[in-house]
Image (tube, helix red, strand yellow):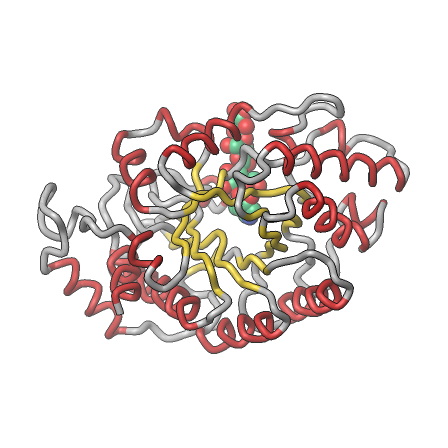
Length: 351
Ligand code: G3I
């Protein structure tokens, strides 16, 4: 899982940063060039994306400028989750999700829906209920059908089932697994497909990007789902990694290939590379080489169709509150200046 820092990559990134790869504006090396990451990635048939959260419209102008220009696809970070969309059994609420979808559509960006079935961010009415299997099946079907139908033809891909695995590769003991059993996964895909037959449907997981017990579990399930004719299109690889723990290009490529051999796509869905704060120049260089390695591996895999980062600026990231003492995980810094990781990504896309 560990990989040595690619010094040539750092040198290239720093060279790019120092030689004025910009379109004028704030100064050499600081302003992203006119050609966007989305446009560069499109030349590889890859969608370059970012997550964004519901409060985006009140954020700095710089945030909105970058969000509205650099990405081909966006993922609402929280607004489509169960606690947001169905606050009571009989109430659906789409205020934030609608705003985010309208924003993306207005700028020609695709929308990745996140997420329909997850053990986390569930409403209290759901987690506190003493449901029978049939009741929970009904609740799950109603939820999936309502949300997918709401955005039919507008959300191009859904993370249908999120994080269903334990680290050892067995299925997580979620409320859905406990009460319904493992068949909840196939049913979720079936119901999502019925609600929008054109949407691409993914199983999304973390720490299952390289080779190991967890990714073997994901692969085995994917094999079963495909064999059973379940309408699954791909595996989402979240890619929340650190500067010392991340998949090697070899392991990641091998995992992408075996999933491709099943006829499935793989998308990088939530990448960030968290660093211990304050981030050193050396750590930022390592981070740049990791972003480059993962992206390059995706570009080399014909079934890797999207590369999404989990928001784009260190000013707005889930990391500092979840991992105190860590941060600086994204490709723009807190002042929206492009970091070495940004230039490494451009360099990989321009190769
Ligand atoms: O909505 C409440 C708001 O009413 C309240 O005032 C505020 C005060 O803390 O909290 C708000 O909820 C927060 C929510 O984000 C919306 O901002 C939660 O506390 C906070 O825990 C939640 O964090 C989200 C996290 O998922 C929850 O698990 C992150 O923003 C979101 O980026 C993160 O995303 C997940 C993916 O869905 C799945 N993969 C891992 C990834 C990172 O954890």
